[in-house]
Each structure stands twice: as structure tokens, then as C-alpha cells.
Image 1 (cartoon, rainbow, N blue to C red):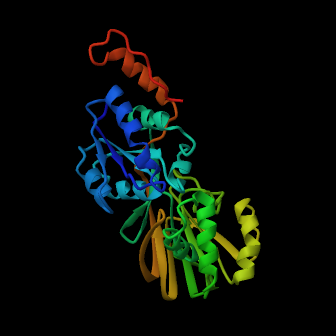
Image 2: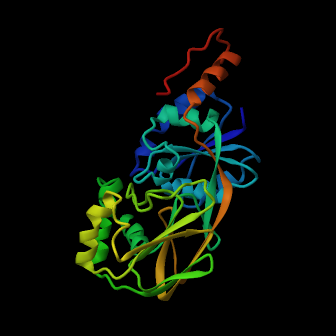
Image 3: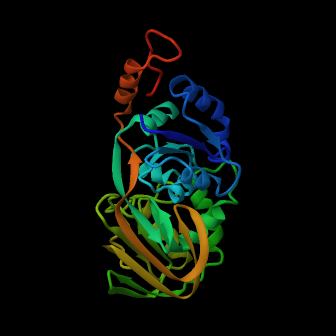
Length: 319
């Protein structure tokens, strides 16, 4: 098998990743005792661990979008991203079809599953796997860190959205896609999407495909508080693109210039506010262990290598 390291963010999913650490360690010790399990100690630690992995290694992120984002920052050298989704949003896991996979199955996919190539986005020098946004959505991502612990996924996003709407004030913006100006006017938000969903499941970009060499930009223009609340049901159903104040364009390079600094986010991680939102795509630059046929890989591994002196290995639960 490829060299590998498992990186666990114990704070992910409001502490759920830490609560499952013993179960995860037992599984790894049973099936791949040579693979280290590293527990992060604070922000940025996952990036350091990923960057120190051998070239071509499988680097398994156990946590949510923030953990995946940190690991992606440290990839390179043809390292492979594995995902064990235990987060509050898990939009990157949704992008690769792993958001409803149980712990053991996700681990076996990360370590033995087939490797697919997806596009990698960059906002400035910051990479992203799923989304980068400017405006209201980035403000909501920042506010979501203060949400009550019992809120997860979509409910956490809605709580943060309600808080941000109290002080809504739209900037003016101009938008270019591949050098062509496509919009000028007030802007509620701009979402550069490599995946269909963000915010824990909002299907803002139903047309997005993670391996087509494009980034899809969806923007909302002049919306007030009531307008935002009115468009939410359509957004949650993926039927918002027909609204006259919502625009869309896809391309390789996106540029939005605001009349003042606005908050940005990349895969849910808040970035410094700026007046220029520039995004580009690197086609096929992100290698992801995403083939759900991982059980077959685990069974083959068990047949080829009895563990701990056993003559016959019974394959553990992966479903």
C-alpha cells in the first residue's frame, strides 16, 4: 500500500472527532499498525503534518472542512488526500461522495480506495477544494464559529446567517470572468464553487463539477434582509438561479473588485478582508482517494498479508 498518515482534529464536529479517536486508533492498529495516527494540537498543525508526509503518501484528514482545508494546504509532491468526515458541514466530503460514509468505510476508502483527480481552486495563494466566497457568506462562515455547540450543518449556517442579517450593508462590485465583465452593481455575495454545495449542504451551484477544469461563480446582487429570507427556500431547493438578481458564469479565472474590503473564506476558513477577490483553477491538481470500492481493496490486503501472525484474517466492518 502507499505510505500514509492519519491526521485527527479532535475539536472537529464540536468534539465528535475526539470522542471517536479511540475507535479510530483501534481500527488502524488492527489493520495497518504501521500507519501513524497524529492528533492535531492547534490551528495550522494539520498543514505541518501533511507537508512532512513522504511524497505520494495518502494523507487522511479526520474532521470537517476546516481540517481538510488545512491538509490541502500541506499537500504537494503528488500526495493523496483521504477524507474521514466528522465535521459540522462536510461539503468537501459531499463533493467526493463520502459525507454519509461510516468511520471504518471512510478509513478503508482513504487508505485503499481508487485515486481520482479533482480541480484545485485558489483564491489569491490560498487553496480550496470546495468553495471560496466573498461578502455575506464569508461573514456567515466567520460568525458560525460562535454558534451554539448543539447546532451542526445547515442549522449552524442558518443561525449565523440570521445574526449577520442584522447589520447587512451591501458593497458595490464589478465582476470579470476570463477577462470579460459580466456584472457591475451592489453585491450581497459571490461564491466561487468547485462543488455543488456549501454552508453544510446549500446547493448554490448545481452546475458545478469538481473535475471539469472550471470554477463556477454564483453571485447575488441587490438583496435586502427580506429579500435574503425570501430567496432562502429557493436556494435550499437549488432553484435560485432563475431569480433576476442572481447571476452565474463559469471559467478559469474570476475577479471581483469591491469598493471596500469584504470578508473572504476558503472551504469555510475565514481569510483576511480585501477589496479584490481573485480566483483561478488548477485542473486536476488535487488527488483524492474517493473510489467507494475500498472494501475490495481491504479484502485484497487481508488476503495478501495476515496480521500479527494470524493464518487467516477476517475483514473488519467497512459498511
